[in-house]
Length: 116
Image 1 (cartoon, helix red, strand yellow):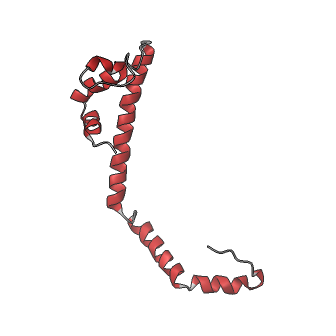
Image 2 (tube, one colour):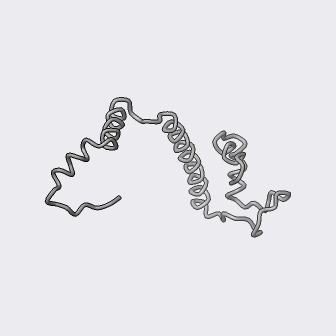
């Protein structure tokens, strides 16, 4: 994007811009957006679902955090790394999350997703 420094001829420049193809295309796109809403409603729907999903995940994690902190319980276990063969190494936080996973479809979906 370039600046404009020929202020003596600004009126001519504005008239050229207002009749340019890019300006007319942009005005048309804006008018369509005002009439029909989002340009890509499917993408907007996916984004809303993702937003809702992550809000629900965050809500559950915060609830577990509040419970542990209210009860003055430690979050992690006795070991630095969780051992999948030893459930006692998970600690309180991950143990509660694993328990909720059995009954909560949101946490089940989250923990079943491939890690990226």
